[in-house]
Length: 356
Image (tube, rainbow, N blue to C red):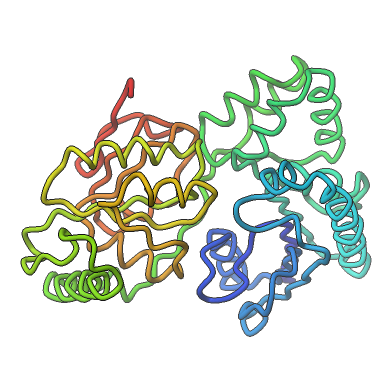
């Protein structure tokens, strides 16, 4: 009998072009390919191509608090959104209960991505014979870290009450959680599994030969020339000689993209392409005119830029197991990154910068 999986997440692609939550979609695809039945409970963010695949999607309204630049930032900007989050949690919890009812005799696995609000309060304390897995990505752990110690202790007890198995996307996050948790829960947390988020790189990109990559690079830089005539590096005729660097992420303070932009000022004959959106975009465009800001792009186009770049750059110190860095490594693109999370050692294709 096929296992039934209930995936609860606030991040899931709303379309084929949507970059958000693609690693969770990869997880769902793996479940269905292995013969499992998958139900995805996520915010309703428009028409999804997922329902054309082999899983069931349960979009929840209201979803106004979710999506870029992240629920925490949206709540800080508009605190009244907490009421929509509470209603979202209530409705998502109802869906979980409804899905559990007819599956009492089957193997049911609930996978709650992000501890708050998915492991608690959305997952009920009583789930019958269902297995519960709580996946910690980092932002949920940082949220817990900002709370007073009594609040953190209460939340950890509420998590434990659901009797979940824990998964952390990096060893550093697991150790950080154990350090902050009540003493009696430390052994439970330290016994958790380390499981970086799944990646699904399109085979078409992995199979490109050197000639095809060169042509793709020429085409992308040519498109860049048409979009912006103000960047001489982007309009260079010799695209082979031009050093092309990419940085990908939300344009927020914690990503430290300004560190890369300042360094780029000291590197002539190079082109820096920034992919992502966020509140710092206008400031960056004003102060760093040599860089090109493309905003948020479809995932496939973003992966193309990573593939043709001479290096992917990352200055963030708050990543547990950076998805974009692991994508670059799978695509064979060198990485220069700040030491962060489990990225602490140099490899043949990765240079880690410390004390910066």
